[in-house]
Length: 480
Image (cartoon, rainbow, N blue to C red):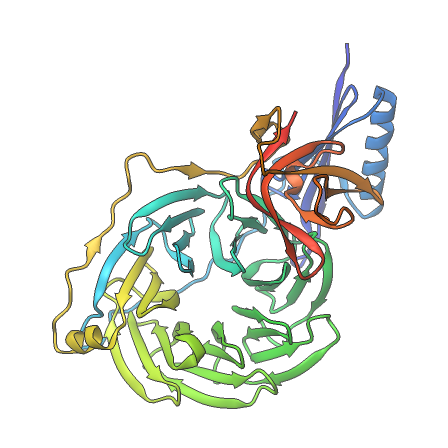
């Protein structure tokens, strides 16, 4: 009868450094490794070896590597989790004489920062870890239940990612959300952006951390300021906004391209093809040229700017302030209107086809009719009756898989599906494509928590990214 042994290690550094654990359990021929931030459930990886002796040897190697890096034996639960920074905001009543023409409002139940709107859906994520999807008419379609508060939602093509307070970034593009990136334990996420599979993280300390599609660190920079609430990325640069302005870095980590001080700390960022927009604590949005950081226009509000967005091409610029107002400016900075949100201050926003979507301090996703006719009527005191969206009685709810056992198993791949396999490469578990018609040497972006050497999985589809890897599209099932 096989015995089970567990070894638990922690690495905790002073001054905001690493604060993480590493646990190895050996049960006969099976080695399970659980790791993550102290106080969190962490991720689990399981491997099966030919004999119990080989399993013990593999576990000893893993533990030895961690001890050499400074990990030491500890007792689970004795060391407290490190505090996570929640954005502290105030929200005063609006001084606008009229209220925005709100079409519908969905109350998520907790303060919300995350928003993404595309042609099919609206996504909203709150500090309770709930992400909801709605259609443009306001019907709630599904709920994703994540382990911790959602800092932001971002899109990379048609993949949707949620950055959470547990230090992970979850891919929400299929029914099985998974942790696509695991941020270093000393990084307190403030904001993130993803471009072509490369994750860019701005944090509390004003740093910028860049991670590739395989969840491996590429490069980092200590910021010129602190509290970096802005990061945007494109082919030419990563644009990093913090307490002392906006700094652009070369995408490959080659160095700083330009730095522009702003009027006040940057609290939010937006980008268009040739410009970035920085909303600041000194009541302005500033438009900077991506080419050289030159100030091109200033959009003046009446209170600190918590969020901003534009219509396509920057024709109109929108801003939400700390006094529950929303503004619209023309491209050159002329204020066209100011209206009350009717539901707190907008912490994030996005414009889509004559509608402005806001997420607010009271946890609401608000759909505003931003057409010229609707705003004119609102300024004259005529607004529609806002519809309060209710949750369906049987709302589909999806939670991340935390182990191989939680993944649905199938005995055969359905027609048209793609088979992938976990393989060992240089001491790491990678995922390659088995099905014909794909580059066998390319890696697949795949959840670490369910990787098991030798295991095969079925996915609905794979899409090639320009960086030379594949992304999963659709459900993930284990092939028995």
